[in-house]
Image 1: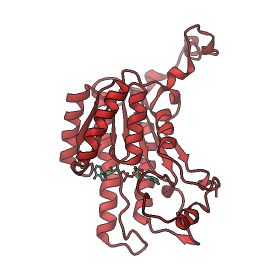
Image 2: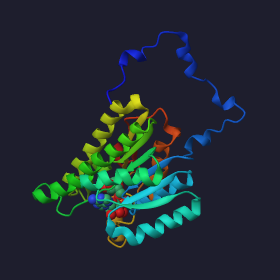
Image 3: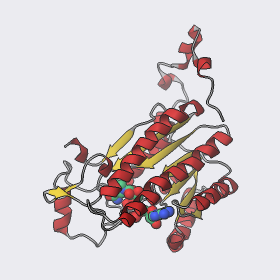
Length: 293
Ligand code: NAD
């Protein structure tokens, strides 16, 4: 579809000011918390079996949305009971869908499955991502390629199907991407950078892609934002680091701790919902203050 004729948007009369209510709270039925609701919305979450993904799926389901939780087929044993539990707990439709986000054919098939199962897509959490071992300054080509394929190309492919569904169904929506602290700062552990070179590049690419989409898709009522988690105790560190490593990692974090999955989920609920209706093209740092240095 060609973009709308931009000259049509030039405002010519005083009715233009009617769109700016000054005191919405004075309406008897007005409740500001309603802006956080996703009642009746349809959404999907990639990396849905992981720590951040399943907590965002839970938040969106509690907020009233039907949700497709999308992950690799190998997560089936976790994804199926998760979908059932969320559906029973929140009384909405929650379905597991399987897709490798780096594979265009599979993502194209996901588009069909999403429309078949949910009807449409209003909100999308573009979140699947990996941290590949060996991702240092001298990383092998394969490490670079795998990281970019899953994190950056996967984000592009899944955001494309989301925004195309929104436009084909003539309604707006909200895209929320998982970038990372590593997109903005070199992680600093024990006096030096930690090895996440391709990861940081992929996450910086995601952030800039989210910003570009914000500009390009605003005429269609589609917002696009990124969240940049710092260290989050999402499950990936469970049993893998000793208390000394915890203290070493959190030394440069002003709040001196990891974040929790729910502390990311609340940020993503804000960006997905009408609570952020005038927010697009931004990056929300949720990192305990790490990025201030
Ligand atoms: P996680 O490993 O628990 O979740 C990631 C999920 O992505 C997994 O369920 C995995 O199966 C899925 N996935 C991997 N490759 C895939 C593919 N090709 N197609 C579809 N799904 C795929 O990790 P998490 O901590 O929940 O991370 C979620 C996102 O947050 C990732 O993008 C990660 O880079 C980002 N992030 C995490 C942290 C943190 O500290 N946990 C910090 C910053 C950013």
